[in-house]
Image (cartoon, rainbow, N blue to C red; front, side, top):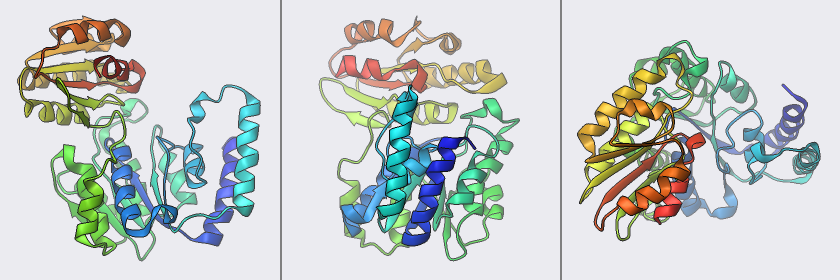
Length: 349
């Protein structure tokens, strides 16, 4: 653990011991952030804004989770110089000494390398541990999907004795997760595109929140930008541009297939997939041709989609996509964060 993480967790441990918040920890290969936002919306509707803290953005790492717990709203990946970090660490220590945590914390926990989730759950024991879907994301540093599933299972292993584990009934590693849990398991079942709402409803019911309040909360605007956000206008845009994996690509393409007019898929490359990255892109390309009328690909690996058009960068693609669209089209924009397909959404809207 580097010095920054040591300082941050020192501050957080003090507050966790003193304030004892109810912790909901969410992991999975897809839908972590949108599920976090949906759960937060339900809890805020029930208990009020001041009683609930939802981790900002994707603060889900050894450095990000303590910042999320303390209420920071920043992208620490943009911290390029040491004095910026010095200010953050001073503020974190102050918050650890004199701040106060809300009653509920809704946190996202990510895993890029083996052992990441074990480190996080050693500090933060969830009252409710959620695993959304375990897919092919972030496989670069794992030997197999099962190895990744074992990593994700750390969140249910760490649930407090009186807590609950919430897992996806249809997942390929459902049995592994059930066996990993030493607490009651609540399973949810839905299409992948509906995971965020379904988990939020499941947790709301576990906390005995009124059904009407849950429904009203989920009818509000809680979807984060770039994560299955539907934008209606001259055409319908499915903005799922924040990130991509084979599992989430298939889910988004299924959503596109329900659209009206021409169904246009703008697909950026999927990064961090390890040795099988070319095969994953070929398989997604085959799936896309069954669900879209026209496919536009972006990025070197995206050549393996065998799309109707290919561009090296999202900047190049943006103007061409806008010119190509017709009134009434349905368009999906999706790709790994490094491809920056969000620029295409900005150009369209």
